[in-house]
Length: 186
Image (cartoon, rainbow, N blue to C red; front, side, top):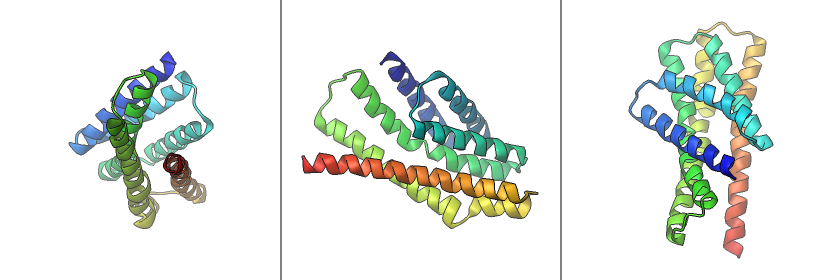
């Protein structure tokens, strides 16, 4: 239990810091590198569910592979921005978990607001924005394919990682809606 609280507290601080830096357009590449290191440490230190392990591995491998391509500063910054903004929903998930794990007393209204903010930001950033920027506009993938020397294996890797990440977020969306449905039929 104490380890879960520590994990949520660290995740909360890192998510706030990352999103704030991205919002201010400050040190985005460095924040991306910081998140890369955090995901590695998080896998080593804290017990994770299989889906979280898959999430972290996809993030680590994709970041590393893109780092090896030696993208221009603008292209690398654009990649980091998209990936860092996925962390917005983590802020509200961490708050929700901290309230639960610390047994913090708060009104149902407060809990509902936090849950609503989590669901809203999750759907906006992890489903809509990610899909729009990376999959629909193919913004990053086209940039990588057209401007950098990548082989067939790299193309397959990026397709699999971008779509794999999206599928994982869709899976989590179904879990979220399943919980909402169960709450509504009570």
